[in-house]
Length: 231
View 1 (tube, helix red, strand yellow):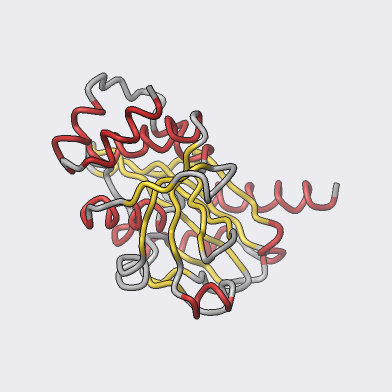
View 2 (cartoon, helix red, strand yellow):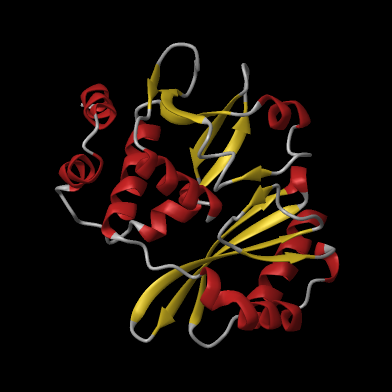
């Protein structure tokens, strides 16, 4: 009950701190790490953009994440602090999702429904320190092996991603909290879809040719392999 009351107070304060062009769409509380993530819909001169706000008692372990970050004791967060940070930083991090990014989000959902997941082979020093050592999304992430594998058995299936363009896009979406991480064996980290984020963003997504869009953009065998497994 205490957790629920604390969370409700935070929701009230964050909503009160939003700017006039913003709407709170989703929130994800991670009690294990004392952090919370907020998906905000922004109208910017008629263009719909998406913004992630992170509130925590410690800095994110992801370097170059695309999120407004407030490092604070969650019990004393107030709307004034939220408003101040958003005013200073929302233009920097709010993003209009491109058609190919929406298609990749659709792919994440299809993969999850069919028992597939993104896997990142972490550098040994980062894996051993378990979030105590930062993961740089522009360098560490891009220099690591990205694969598509079985969600329930990471040793069962591994399709290596052979597109730096695709990997860069996954890193960007991960940094916006459209994916969340789960550590597993053999230095492999699962990147799981944050459904609270994906569902509202894709609620009006009607492109029936998204598979084709992915193949035209990335043109790699792994897209065809994933499609063949799903279908």
